[in-house]
Length: 409
Image 1: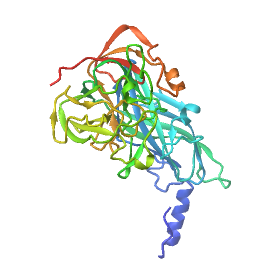
Image 2: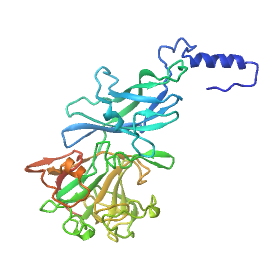
Image 3: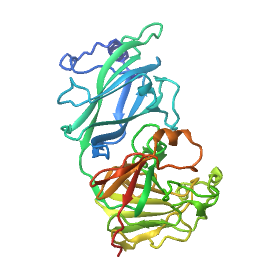
Image 4: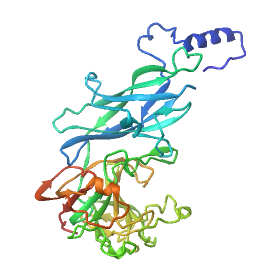
């Protein structure tokens, strides 16, 4: 709202404000195209990169930022994703519990309902997929249905049903192809893509004045032994985990831009004291590798003293960078790996990528994994007898894969 100004034209300004508040735009040439929208929406990032998953479908993963600009609460009832070239056929639809489950506050908490308070902001986590044969749209738009402040505002503040299309998002298809960060059989993609309940997918962090989803496509790689166990023996001993000490590999030729190698191993089952956690040490001993085209590979929680490279080193694809450990903010040994659009570990946006070659061995049961509070037990009931070789795909959540051993430089 424009404030009243101390000059002879105050009444004229006030009249224009009143006309605008009633929804009567004085510029007739634009009245058919413009509308007041109590809930504003925008994509968090300029574009989303579509990628082929191991389920044989094309996946879209991104976020919308929603803000209610009026004192009346704005309650979302439906969000549809549309191709503006063919808006009559929604590509995805979210409503009811499916819609509410995708809302997050800016502190990453899940709200109780779909109502957004005055001046309140929510992040909406979008993920959907299309058949591999589908035509990929150049842009996406979003049709929002909601109950919100009416125009003119109702005296009682009663919300009015509304619908409008907002938040244009560009679609990019450029993906980097990498080799695996590990070698051998039995690797499980823990905390992987793409459901909104995943700890990586649902975590946006305010860094350097912006919200980033650096871990949007992060995977915590853990390894099964021949009997299907992640850990054999006392789970509080790092040496009893199948993956502990496994070699970590460069996924592409590149230049090392950052390392950390001195943090002690964390006792499994216990997270470090929150007072000791900083942006510099949260991911433990690690390597950031510049792989070109503005992209960086990130390896976290590496074994104490195992990092073999330093900033400025040139490395070759398949080169050993260090060993898998349990340092930083972690409760069990694993390799946290993701690709990001900048060198900042948490102040960059994560992007999908293509793994050049791997073999699908099966999948850990999502229900079993969700129900357990321990990593003990047998996890290979979902192993397949068939050998499913794949190339140029992104591995989805809880997949069990074999990575071929590279020719190390």
